[in-house]
Picture 1 (cartoon, rainbow, N blue to C red):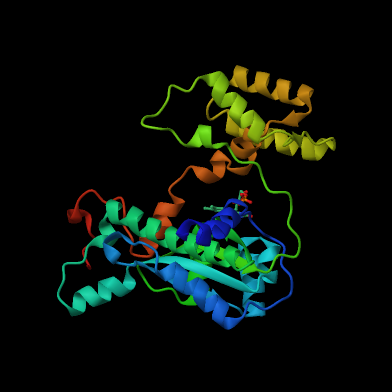
Picture 2 (picture 1 turned 60 degrees about the vertical axis):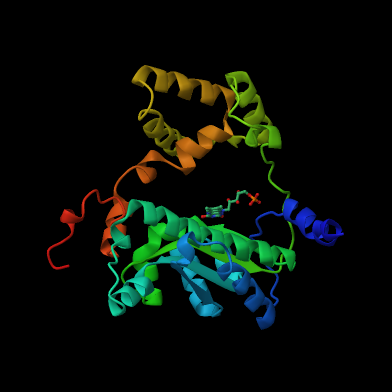
Length: 297
Ligand SMILES: Cc1cc2nc3c(=O)[nH]c(=O)nc-3n(C[C@H](O)[C@H](O)[C@H](O)COP(=O)(O)O)c2cc1C
């Protein structure tokens, strides 16, 4: 009986997909409140709830967000929910109650706080979806902490984790393929997956996703140069040229080459920028000893 009662919601969750195209229709305030309640009632390590949610419904400010994050659809979302990890409130409270707060120096608690923030965001996304509201997560907010800090007056020890742009879907694009259960769920132990099996599973997932090598010569040179810089971080110069030759004669990049050679490019992915930005927010998650604390603290 219970199972029957909830089966509809579970089936709807299996149909979930990202929505980036929104109708101009307001989410009723009570519906938004239910969504937020779903978020803040998620599990939380130690029940600390080290996060905050900024609700953005102002058109002009959403446009500013869209510009900052370089995603025009953010401007058309009825609501943008910025989820922060937040030690600020717990640090203040600890000081008031004379508790020894050092969580902003803890690697362990950094990941737990990040998990908590993401789980909260996920619960809001699910609740919205069950109400017929579509969303898109934007992870890129973590690279825009400076702009977001200014825009929302974020105090020390807070950090943007994810943005959830939501609204009623205008139209649904084809749902992206997923790996199937047998590639993601293993009973009892991790099975000895062979190369052929792994390649077949991903080839199926990415079937039809082929980024053409541009025909315009400037665009082509630019794209190949970017790809070359990425390849060179892993392959010898000779092998790099061989892979480029193969790609050019094939006429397209494999999806996984696009993802790791162009989209998530090593130029952007590798470096200390995120760690430096965290430090600016008084967050030192990878500290190995409290003796490294700055003097003034
Ligand atoms: C942590 C995270 C970060 C994401 N960041 C972005 C983003 O910056 N821009 C974007 O358009 N989509 C973003 N997405 C949405 C993914 O692109 C999307 O989930 C993926 O393509 C799979 O599509 P589906 O959600 O429809 O299954 C993000 C999703 C997650 C979970």
